[in-house]
Image (cartoon, rainbow, N blue to C red; front, top):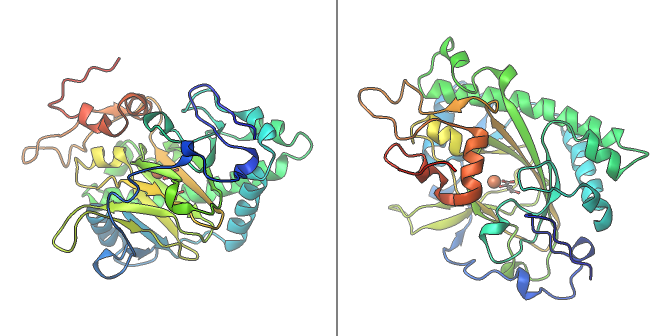
Length: 352
Ligand SMILES: O=C(O)CCC(=O)C(=O)O
Ligand SMILES: [Fe+2]
């Protein structure tokens, strides 16, 4: 068994997760702190048709009530999604020593590594990831010196398609918050030509005893919005807090053909002055391999995001201090799930 540990990022696995049995380092306790429920009845996660005439209203409602929804009729060709999935498979099927040629030196870098939250938890996750920040070219050349272009081309094509979907969804969200078409361009992510994206490719290998391991620990996304592709295998769960219907529970997000999952992240929660729910989520493991790609959308590095002036006026005072995306990531790298507390107006946290 070859185990690897890179600086700051924990990667702890034999060749492509072929463990004889689950080592204690990967066994998570407290996985059943809350019951897991299927997305049925009142726990049905909204599915929104991108061509719905009531799109803006429905998106606003889903972002407030759930912080997650599925988008259908998105217009991205199944052929591209199949090619994208094949390239992801090709990447993660490489031998561990090849993948480690592009290992991240730091959680926020591009390249291969474990999950970015591992340092806050004592156990290793049952997953591996590959982050693309601008272009994957530099890494792809190291992974496939003689044949890197097909990977880069498909990643670029997917990025373009998902980017235009992301920008449409962000517009719909902002409009639902009362921003006018003219005002969109004055908001941190309303100008599509200035929106930044980061892609996070995830592989969750099959496990013979999936109830004892975890793909990703509970977290919110730092970005404004995340759009998730999954290869037809479910695993994502969102936390639904205690309400009139049931106690706090993990709701399984279904893998519905030809849909993407859309998550609200911390920065959109801040921009909406707390109205949109930055959904807490985790990933569970099954007996089947799962691949996913989360594409994160946020503002350019130097743009500060605070509550929209529309929402934080005389009637409701602003809840958060403005923060840049890298600034928030830095606070999260120290405080993990307490980061938003730190940028509350009434907090006295000082950025180090
Ligand atoms: O794989 C998934 O379902 C979710 C991935 C995720 O939450 C992330 O990459 O932040
Ligand atoms: Fe996430």
